[in-house]
Length: 144
Image (cartoon, rainbow, N blue to C red; front, top):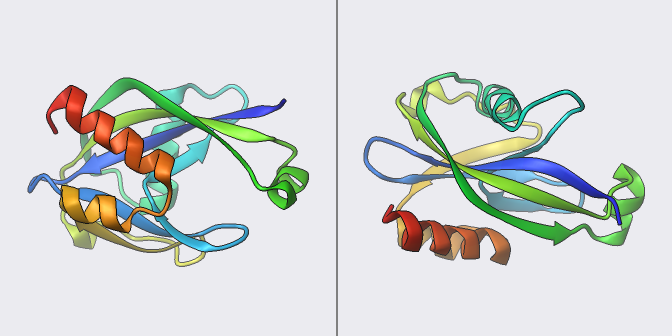
C-alpha cells in the first residue's frame, strides 16, 4: 500500500480561533485544516511553510509546534488511480497566526474561502471525522 506523507496544521489566531479552509477537492468541496503533501527532498517543516504560503498567501506566522499527533486515511478509488497513492498520513502541527484576516489571500481555485471558528463550530463545520478526532485529541493533550 502506497501512503503519501503530508502535513496538516491547526492554525490559531490571536483570539484563539481555529482556521478552517473551504477546499475544492478532486471529488467535492469540503471544510478542513490546511494540509499538503511532502515533496521529495522536503522536510515536514519546509512542506508546512510552503503550504501556508501557497494556500493562504501569507507568511504571517509565529510559533510552530510539531504535535507528535497524526492520522492516516484512505483515498477513494478514483483518487487512488489519479494520484497513485492509496492513502495519506498527516503529521500535525499547531501554528500561531499573527496577522489579520486581510493578510490571508486564498487562491480561489483550490482554496475557495476560509473562516476562523471557535472549538464548537470547528467540530460542527469540519467535514472529515479524522480531522475532528485529531482536533479533540489536540484539545485534550495541549489544552488549546
